[in-house]
Length: 353
Image (tube, rainbow, N blue to C red; front, side, top):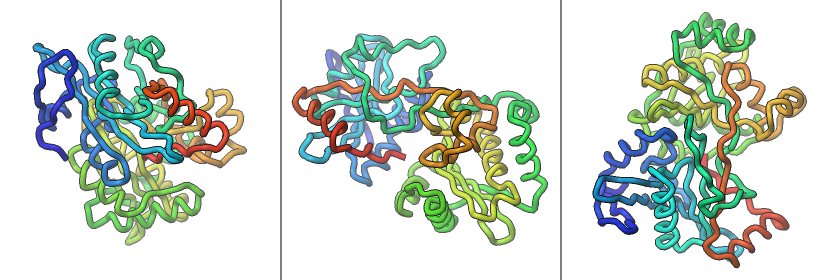
């Protein structure tokens, strides 16, 4: 990770900020997100991405910032600059200056921005700033966010009767729940592989989760485990920044069902988030359909994110869609080729989880 960060100023004085100042700035934003921390850039830099923090300042202090990831696209389509779940500025002028700085410095074919979930009262007109809706998102645009304010009985009361019953049964079982250490990473990675093979979804190699642990824990995350005797039944990696917690990675064994350990471990994560002062818990990813479509199909489908919707829907959260993905072309020729490749040949979204 960098020491002092050289800003990329436009119409401003060159200054430097420290990693601590960057974290404080991101955490203070209404849309604060763990994917805008320098640690996320350091993580992705180990796995095929470039990472560059951009901050613009005036004499009164920092007005905007964004962690920008960069990746070369296949088929000679150039390089994509990407802002995951963020981009922060005080006004439209500051946003324009930020995008201009990225355009000048990145040498990318286009900029992709996923601003995340707007804060109450916040307005962000991406079209007016020169963006167009992107046909390719990287982060899941739709999720379920749980309100975890209030006493534990209040949170439980918001859940479906079935989920509430299973959480309570999980706490009466012989399962123990604890915070894991670095020594538990091997078992966690093995469980991730088993879960991925059983449910037909991709998982990272062990070195990736080891890097996540190294960079984020314990300052911004926790590895939580559910065990019975010497058997690991379920595990999650959960993260927190500002008033929000995110459930990004999780796995369970075939034998977890009878003990409801998958419910108990999520309840443990919610309690961890409350102790951190969080007010919401993001379940991170459900199929990108409206609620009527989700409710009509979830019992018949198990492909993609459909397999987890049935589990996540019962926690009493709000189904929400982020602003999605937006593209700003820097090279019309390269961006046009990228759009054609998406349409006719297919380009998989670079894995970001």
